[in-house]
Image (cartoon, rainbow, N blue to C red; front, side, top):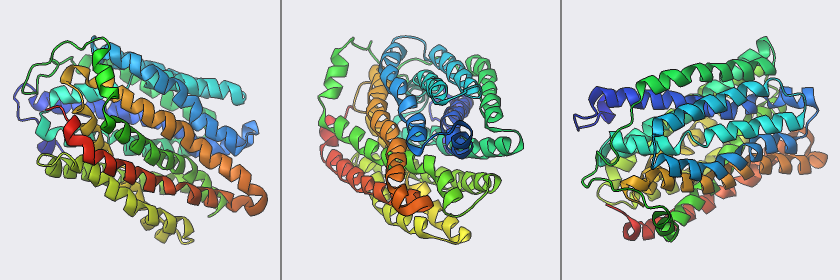
Length: 423
């Protein structure tokens, strides 16, 4: 990886690679703490007497409310202040609330702890996007952002693996406490290593101070921003929803135990996710330099291929066949990250990238994360009287149409992107 994303500009060099590695590690904890709830859902449901709808609210809305709402003002500060201090505080906060989840005694206590995780993670992503754009030149940003996005499959996989193994060995409460405290210990290491770079230092023109509101108004007036954000949100409804409920699906429909589910889903998420993220970044840099529309057409095609793959995978009854069939759409589901995030970075000047990223994440996560996990849980509850333990299978079927909507929105955004592009 280091030979591919190493910056050409000597100001970054090997230190830029080290910064990227630490950012990936922080993002790994971001998704580890975010996704660990999925593998623990069965144990929590039995212990606290919850419904699928309540689990879906905790996995989505509880997290998304403050994660999306605070992301924009925190990014506004990041465009004017020290991004590394903001990320250090955010890492400490979300990790601390993850540990507190282990002490929850009921639905509302756990709900509010997950809200706290969302408050912390609101400052963990948009500033990182901006930092990466200042450490890597334009020709390598899609790959660098894709490498950063490795934190999603790695963190999701480790959340599934560690969460399941710790819960099986001790209990679900210990899983929250252990992974949360590990993140708290990482925070001072992050601050010692990651230094604040000059804004726009890797761009042809120097960055100017970000305007208070004018830049945000211009971004929100661009049709491509809304089409990109809503397209990503549509895919995230399915992506987040399926990822959260797959552990429960394998328990109910295929009868897998906790440890087996952890190993099966953890390895599938890691392998498929890393391949998909890197493929998207590589294709984005290869095709997007000459034709920026490719940054959006690549994920659109990936989602159209992922839909039938997911449909066939959910029907599989053999575990080896299910692994292969789920592996393909797991990768395709994450192809969008590098290309789409790169496109968003180029809708605004360098000094406004944190805010632009936060606006994008606001739409994507409020709809995708806030609605996704709840949608599948609510459909499962509604179908349980008819289908029993198989209700979750049919709930997953019902959500796959969001991939078609996402592909259509990305296709429309590609038609407009060149006019809204900021060189």
